[in-house]
Length: 240
Image 1: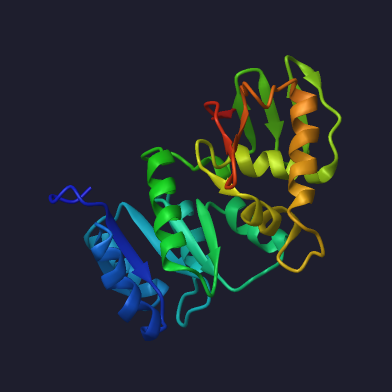
Image 2: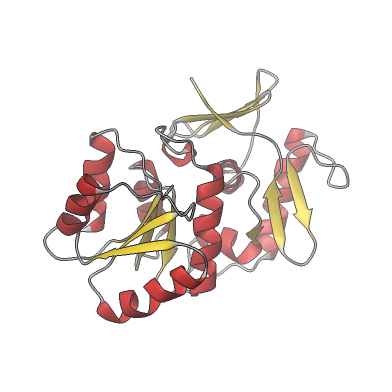
């Protein structure tokens, strides 16, 4: 981090209306902030001075956010990245995470939500290592998830889960120790335009708990935060 011990944020967005307002907001939240207006300018800044986290818009001239992210990861640069996107489809956002983004936020967004995401990503960042969201296999104790094969094991035995339950478990595993609202899970797993209510999230969480033999009152894996959402409480690591 910077010499002031404040996390150093590089904000990359070509919309001056966003950077003019968002940069001071991030500074008031306790971050050092630099601004770049496109991916090329951002890469030049990163070559001169590292950042602790990049807030990266997807749609930009010269070099867009997705291509900038691919270049960073191809160079083995694992600076945490939060993507700002206007894409609603869950498959598109999953692709962005697989390419090495640590998290994403749909535009328009609540600046306070961005602050929460930034702090969560910084807490779980592993310096010099890929984020959990870029790992093919994830493990938490004897629980294992193969993200490409969409298969889950517990104590060496494969579990039978519905596709939505696997997707929901995957999201929680890639965001450990983070309070995730039902609305956010609904958006991430079902998609913003899917005609489902938050009860669908509770139903799939219950399915996962049954498969994991996880007691909701004394959870090993998924903790309920009353009135707010869920948190994956166990330690998660990338698995071979």
